[in-house]
Length: 204
Image (tube, rainbow, N blue to C red; front, side, top):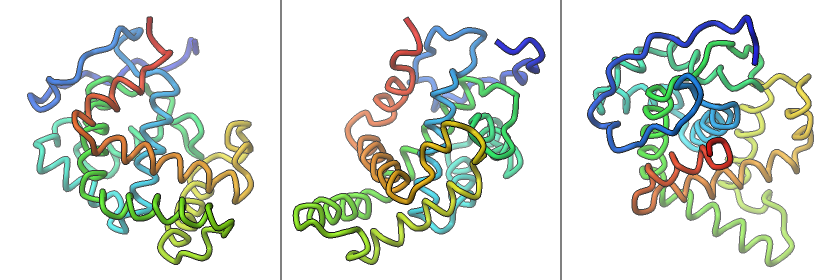
């Protein structure tokens, strides 16, 4: 535990739309490290799929009346920068309310992209069966290229966890794994299932 870590930001009232997500028994009501990393990576994958990027995230926040939690682009950047692998990582915690809002937005955007996600995963499966690289499918190759570019521009290359993904092959594996997780979000009770999975092994 970092003794000089700043206190968690004031917790705003929980929007009613987030009431369906339970509060896991985490210390001080803030998200563990792995949870923060995973939420940010899922949003990174969505940005590689959807060219509107952060604008789409903020638009969904507005549609769901979550602007009290996620006010603007700066607030979004601060929340996502609680991922310790970020180039400009923030030492501030990510509160459960903030994480719930990001998870709800992630799942909503994933549902909007369901057809594309399924197409890309199917294309990868078919290419693998033929021992062909993703470069043989334009849309899949485009997604992987954008994901690699996003990851390398935003993550701190000096961190050991980031160095583990220094090659194109490793980053492609991560990008494809995130696609499968996003597809998981689109199913029945996808929001609840993703939320619970983010705390697997983190709480008793």
